[in-house]
Length: 290
Length: 317
Image (tube, rainbow over all chains, first blue to last red):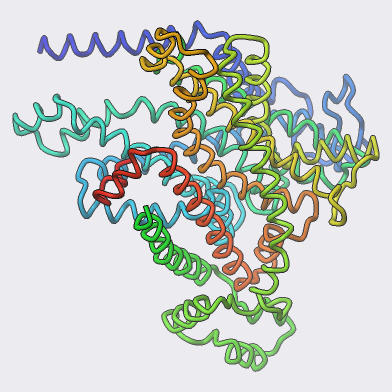
């Protein structure tokens, strides 16, 4: 009982140290603030804007950015800023949901593969080899082509395309953790494989995964907008940023702001995640900083 | 070393065959009747049946898969359902354009990005370092096709110095390459910087400095060769991103390359053309990764010696 207690304190203090290092990094704060602002924007959109994100208002179409319409209006007279606020939730969910799904599957595949080795490892790795012999964007394109365009379909496509990278990384971490003495100790007291994997191997192999998760979220948001752009992915009239950008490209000569602002929102959001991910990586790997 | 290269090349064959099976199977289960798509809604049931018979669409899955794999092995990706042209010929005709963009992107990404990253690491915490860091951070956060559109607005629509889209002289490739290259530049510079920083702090570099070795020699002979290993890995994984980016960039700039061929084939449900393009890109990508792996083995003597020993250990890398 007391052993468990002390282990818990130690784990918490390590977590607290990482947290402190992240908070002390000004770049991380900028990143966190950017992400939080956009999340708040998504939640508070109805309070922040008096306009509807979907109501067509032809007389006010193509109005340039002004105090009344911060980012102008689109071809159907909808306020672009309002649509961007409402659209945040789609982009956030696309990025986060696809990466979390890939993380769960990747951790399971990577753990099984790395821990057991042998034939199981061989089979899983060869399947991943096949998927990874295509660029992940290409694989996401094929899956979207098969599943059809749409929100859930895009999450699945991005998730499936992200799994191999996650699984491979998890496997590499597991391989190094597997050889540790505490695993041998657990084995010597006859812990079951499931218990060793769940209680000892995965927790110790997870920290690099957290960093990958942050950077994959931004990569997947970019991929999602790319899919929308080539006509797969989320479709108009959903105010997803990539879909808005795509709709705007037809008016690039007359209303460049229709393309400018959705892109800026995408940049800010991915920048936020990149900054946060970098700070997390530095915090978990203090040798880099000093 | 020869054995390693041979093994690596032979390994590509089953992988690419499995890719072909996977893609064929995925496309096979896409809902929608090819005959109906090609002939339109006005076609009579007899016409549809005749079309299916001619193109072998009535055969069971396994027969169609077998004949498809057989023709791929002869370099034949079948006919485009929509244009009735040879997919192989179409792809080969479009390859040079995609190749130019991909090559330009790799040059910006790797040949410019990596040295900048290394330079930033050497000059850590100076203005140059911060500038490279911020530029690469912003570059990594931008969708490349959005950057492409912004470049079009600036250079084509406002300044009128470069063409907005289409193909023609070399000037038509400047904006696409720039738009696609920035992301590669950003990620390679960032990764090169952090790998170099890691190496610069290692004990052997400190030892070399303590011995009085000149800073130039420390960087070029002690730090760089060791930093190159992770750099090559990351540059290799960037190839995928760059090739993936090319698909989208081609449709931004209306460049009739492989990417645009594939995206229009997807929207036309021209499955032979989709399958062909995907497998073709997978072949190109595998060749790139082969080069990366060879470079990797060339730079890292540990890998070379492993391969002369046991094959299994490579998988644990």
